[in-house]
Structure formats: structure tokens, C-alpha cells
Amino acid sequence: MAAAPVWSVDPRTGKQREQVAVEATPQEVDQAVRAAHAARGALADRTVRAAFLRTAADLLAEAEEHLVEAADAETALGPVRLTGELARTCYQLRAFADIVDEGAFLGVVIDHPDATATPPVPDLRRYKIPLGVVAVYSASNFPFAFSVPGGDTASALAAGCPVVVKAHPDHPATSELVAATIRRAAERHGLPEGVLGLVHGFEAGVELVRHPLVTAAGFTGSVRGGRALFDAAAARPVPIPFHGELGSLNPVVITEDAAAERPDAIGTGLAGSMTLGVGQFCVKPGLVFAPRGAAGDALVKTLTAAVSDTEAGVLLDHRMRDNFVAGVAERAQLPDVEAPVTPGAGSDHTVAPGFLTVPAARLAEEGAHDLLLEECFGPVTVLARYDSAADVTAVLSRLPGNLTATVHLSEAEAAGQGRAAELLTELTPLAGRVLVNGWPTGVAVAPAQHHGGPYPATTSTSTSVGGTAIERWLRPVTYQTTPEALLPPELRDDNPLGLPRRYDGRLEN
Image (cartoon, rainbow, N blue to C red; front, side, top):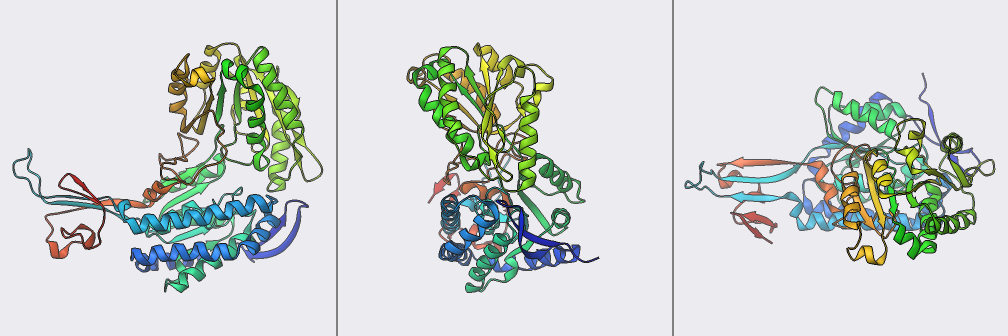
């Protein structure tokens, strides 16, 4: 049987643009993984690795016009958004190059023998080494930042791990262009093409996570797809780490005092956050607690006006559009649910933003309204109108894990008055990032960033954004009573590589 073709599709029209590739056979997946496995030694030199990452960033930036044009044709995300996303991606590659140069990620710890300790301590030297070939599953909504050149790929390469990417079907042409660009960067530094493999097709993705030479995987996508791959990774004869980002509701609590103090600012900010990128952000605020009464009504009035003024938009593909239209219709039909601005279909290829309201007490009860506690991908949010703090607590206690949780406080509450501290205590167990008086859309690439959270937000405790993302692709190893001449240079007393380390309990830089 001939391999199925892979087409690039214009989401603005639903029409096929061009055939980009064919779906990879099991043999082709095997070839890509084996080529990556053979490239491990070529990535061992940290100086070469860092230079490679910087060159990849430079070449991607040089190809900006061509790459943005291709990505826009496949995603309809627009040149402005995509130009910014590509710049973020290049910054991320350079940031990981800096991390590789610094070397602190290796976590070098040296303890010399101490016969006076109980029990005695032998000579112990610990650092981290790369796991091996990493499988990366691209996301639909970020064709650069969470795709072929994104954080999973950048952090894995920085760790010294070759990568095989399973391209997302929503932007296959962009994936091919980016992969070719990164391979050109590899070639400039004498690295084999196999440091970055690329395969297409659903079955190829399944074959990839099961391949015995794949040592870890990174995924961004749906709960259903991510959980299936997570289970496959765990069911292997040799299970592997699976770092999946699966879904998030990203709850927001607006206190009554905050709503009374600045209803217009909060209403406008919420409208902008929930419709940003046509609501296709993993950190979109999907459940918002707003008080009943005059303060909450004023906020809803502003939100209604702002969302009503937001134009319909194109989702990433027609399957997502169909799911969104059906999903919001099902939610809107539930008892006591109202739609101040009705979300749903726009033209034949667009969706109209909107939001739903429901009494918070409905969400505290197990039943049909549980649907409102599930992520709905697209420009919609649910406002849970509450009467008391107990209403909010009751619903929060039912929520699964999230990437983010947000609270909007009044000026006095932000200064420590009221139950602001209690709210933060309630929200912290729910999410990996807790915001005060902000909006979760927009994830800065910074050392202190954490983009992850309790399941189903992610399947591990790690982050996929920020410098510590590199830790996912490393494992520690300790050498005991090993002669100096046999030690890796990273662990020798004279520190020939000039690495930051902890030496006999003292932190050295």
C-alpha cells in the first residue's frame, strides 16, 4: 500500500495547498531514530553545541519573511503574531546556548572522602549526562515556539540529545522548511543531519514513542492524544519519561473588591486574554469567577462590549472549528447557562467569540455542568457568578491540575488585607504558575519561568519553557572512588572546563 500523502491546507478556505511529504513508514521512523542515535557523539562537545544553537537562531531569523509567510498560509495566525513567535523562538535557542556555555545545568557536585562522618563518606563525584534520542511532538497552535524549533527541541539539543520531531499536520510545510534550516546550521558545525529528524503521520508518532532507542519524549497537545502516548511510553518493555502538556482550564478568581475597584480594566483585560490568537492558547482563561451584584454586573457589561467588538477569526483547522461550534452549543444548552455574547460559527471558515455565564453553585455539584469544567479550545470562557467565598472554594476543590491560576485583587487586598493570602493558598496546589492582577496568556522565556502543572496540565513536574526545561533530558550519574585520570573532565579536581560546581559543600562559580 502506498504511503498516504501529507498535504498543506489553508485554514481560511479549507483547500489543499500542496503535497509536502508522505506519512513515514515504520522503516522510515526506524531510520530517523537510528540516525539520531548515531549522532549522539557529535553533540558531546558543549562548545560546538552552543555554536550550533546560535547558528540555528541566526538562520531562522534570516529566513523570517519566508518562514512567516509559510506559517501564515497554514495556520492563519497572521504575520504580526508569527513574526513575534519566531523572534521568541530564536531568543530561546540563544538562551539555551548561553546555558550550555555556562555549564551549571550539569549539576557538578564533588565530595572528597570523610572518614569522620557517620557513616564514612567515600570520594563521590556527581554530574548529569544526556539521556539519548528525544522524541518531540509538535503543537498545532505554535508553529515555531512549540514545534520543530521550539522549546522541547531547543532544550533537548542543549542537553546533548539528538531529536526526532513528529510534525503537526496543521503546518507540515513550515515544519519541513524549519527542519531544513536547522540542518543547515548543523552542517556548518560539522554535525550530522541526524541530529534533527522529522517524520509525518499519526502512526509514525506511535512508532516513535515505542522505538527502543528513544529515551524520552516531549508533547504538547490534547488530553486524549497525550494520554495515549503517555500510556504507550509507560507500557514499553523499558518505560521512558514522557513530558506531556495536555490541557488546562486556567481558572481566574476576581474578588468583589477588585471588581468594584476596576470593572472596566478587568473586563477589557479578560476579553483580550480569552480571544488572543482566537482563543487558541494553552493558557487561555477558560473559567472565571466573578461576583454577583453591582460590581460583577459592571464587569460583565464591559466584557460584553469588548467581546462583541472582537472580530470572528479562523481556527487552525476545520476539525477544531467543528469541535468548537459543537462544544459551545452543548454548553450553552445546559440549565441556568446564559450567553451574553453567543460563541459559535462565524462565516463558513471562521468562529465568533463569546462567553457563557452560570451560577457557581451549579459547578460545585457533580453532574451535567461538569462539561463547563473541561477545556474548550477557541475564543470562549465561562463566568461562574458566585455569592460567597464558599462558592469559589467549593468549585476550586473540584478542579483538576492547571498550567496557571490567577487572582485579581483590590489595592487593599494586594497589600495583605482580606482573604487574599487564603486565595493564593487555595490556588497554589492547582497550578504551576500563579498570577496576581495579570492575565495568563503570554509565557515569558526566563530562568524563573514554569510552564507546567499538576495532571492533566502536564504529565510530569517539569517545565517546557525556561532554562530549567533542559533538566528533562538529563540524568545524574555518580562516580565513586574513581582515579582522577579516569574521571570525565567535568569531575576533575582542577576543573579544566571552568564549570560552576559544589566542591566539598562550597558553591564555586
